Length: 115
Length: 111
Image 1: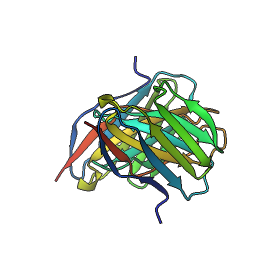
Image 2 (image 1 turned 135 degrees about the horizontal axis):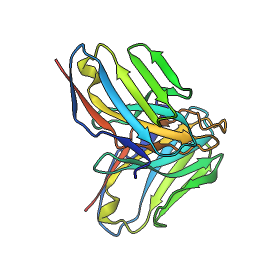
Image 3 (image 1 turned 90 degrees about the vertical axis):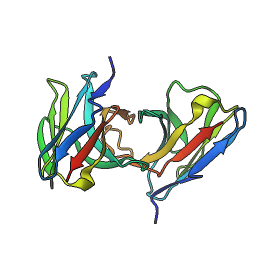
């Protein structure tokens, strides 16, 4: 049973298109995250949701819009895709105790390629 | 100055030797420190975390934290070829679930 799952695993699309990536966790966690890992392997947080509420919103273009229909799901929609959006996008989840000590568990990643 | 710094490597260590991975951080308010391992094409997986100054051991892995020097390290004893991966250091602050990652150190264990 996969703990954190993402679909699709690979996404190849043209510049200017709109695409979505889906994430689901079955760990019973209350916080979910989106990270972007660029070609140099630098992993940077984009968004975080706790019980469907946005709690972290880093400096990300507003073409990126997260949506959490319930605490087990966090989707990422990207409008007007640009070449620079090509990266691996990881979803993660954690239980949140408020102490900054909770382990985050990562999904398998979605490799987005914008042509 | 980067918030979390790691030597990008590659770090090459003979099989059976001790691999030492280092990480420094700039935010003195940082409370929690995590080491993740990432194999090529895979997602990061947690190896261990440390909150208190000193050493924490888990099997072949030992994490060391020195908050005064803003330094955290990971030692891997009896290195195996399967330990070859990129090791990511991550830091968070109390009350803040945001993890700030370093750029990772690529470790290669030579048989």
